Image: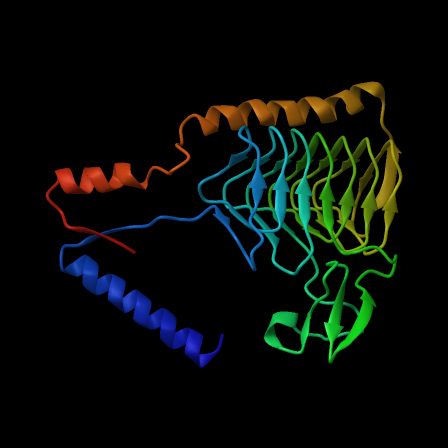
Length: 264
């Protein structure tokens, strides 16, 4: 951590301690959705984004999809992320895209005024010259999550494609350029290396990932039922939160107690 970050954190903590000791109560208002570089996340009316989740940039959340508590879906590199119908990104999972093109620059393009994502969003311009696409496959480094997909808690997905009816177990890692086809179960803790293709209809697990066996009809049905179950749960959670948030309830409680609240 840089000295600037250490000093800044120290000042913030000291300020919070002084406010608390003076009798002030601090309430916070987290922003589950945040626009980035004019790209605003899209969600349908029945999408559930948990109040402590973070959905940033060019993200599309389709009908009955859900992003759960402390999950991060971050499309701030110029390349989009899509989450399909009745799919879910569970607690603490991270879904993101690569930040720069291969053979272009090793740092974030936004740090250098002469380097930026091209107009199509499929490559990087550096020094006035366009540098190919990010992935060795020739495809742009988007992250695609299909329909009826469950992304387990603590998993990490980076510029990969996950087709329909996939169950990604807890704490799995799917790296850039990987392609997980439909009707696949990834066991918890599995690691799918970059540019790996997982064919349809199997159970896979391990680090690196290995084939464990074919899926029967019951297991395939279980993938869809799991996603549907999360969808029902998301609706139950959604009714507890208003679109404008619920911070005002905490604020009203503090005011009734005669305390002076400020936004932290």
